[in-house]
Length: 136
Image 1 (tube, rainbow, N blue to C red):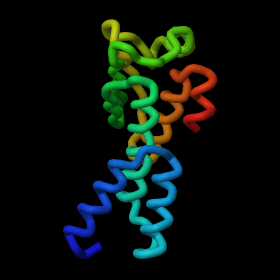
Image 2: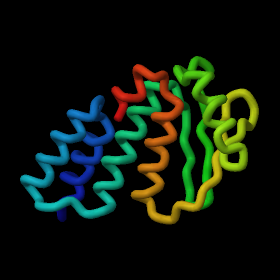
Image 3: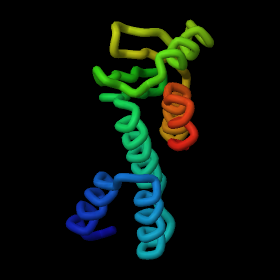
Image 4: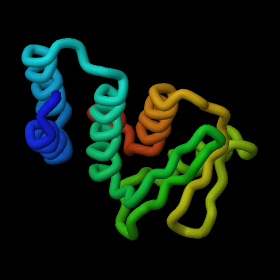
């Protein structure tokens, strides 16, 4: 999109999407109007989807880099505590709690697209069983 104003309008529409369906419709619309999406825009859609999942789970912030990151829970997070404990127990080298509201994780994931996928899997592992399949 050569026009800056048009780009900002579309960024705002993506940021304000409230569901996977809205994001999918926006992607289809942009592809119809401008052709295939560049990788950075695909990543933006994927990150926006992660934000929607995180909001439903009561996650305040996610940081994920090539070496790992953390998930900070809101005070009233909807994360299943038993699933959180099972996650930590499954791989104590990779996952650990850092205080009552933060889960730290370590990994080696260089590519942004792969990190997005890894974070989505992590969020689904933390979600209550009935919500995990709904978020996928």
